[in-house]
Length: 318
View 1: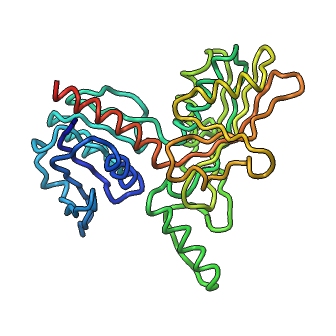
View 2: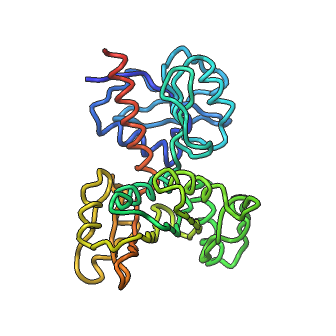
């Protein structure tokens, strides 16, 4: 049975909680777990029936764990310090550009959850023929911003019913009962940071001359991401071939139920390990496919990290 000591920054975030949940359900053993905190009031983290006190980040001895997993946005200084101390560092927040190495003294930055969701459905379909264009619109939940986003939506909703004001520094405009056409500062081309991250990952999956467009909308719901994805091919593609390709993908579940029950909702995917796909359809000429997908935006990256931790533990035991 694989085992390893683990330092975890941001264990109390939605990403951190999801990671501990998937580890708890796996054979991976953690003889020592070090939940790290940069807050003034460290709390307790529950894992496999035991409570672990959060430890101040600035007092932690990096020699106690070979791996740091980061679930806290804007923690670059901590990641660099851990890597400098010789740890293998995994960042699953999407705050840094995806890339790096899974090695001691290195930082491996995973794609953000929405980019992973898109890649999970685009990659298998890209094998069906030459792509001419890909476009996607994402409906992203407020848990993208962690507990701060959840608190902002909850507080604003209560305030509207009470006819009072609820100030928040998380969103530029009210998120409760509203749709925000983006999050973060757009670049000179008009792309937000999360759109740029998704574009960068999708462009690795398609031909160099294939245009890719992504729009990310922030919606007033707590958990789960949705995405409408359209792919345009040079030659006709059958629905049967598209469905078979998606069913063969490791992280995809194709919902094929007649009627309204066959329209996947974000709540269907929350708590699960798959990207759900429904409403798969094609244009009259057969050259365009459109689908609707939903996924748990915390469990997708958590599962990816679990695979990496299992690999590291196996290497250590070899």
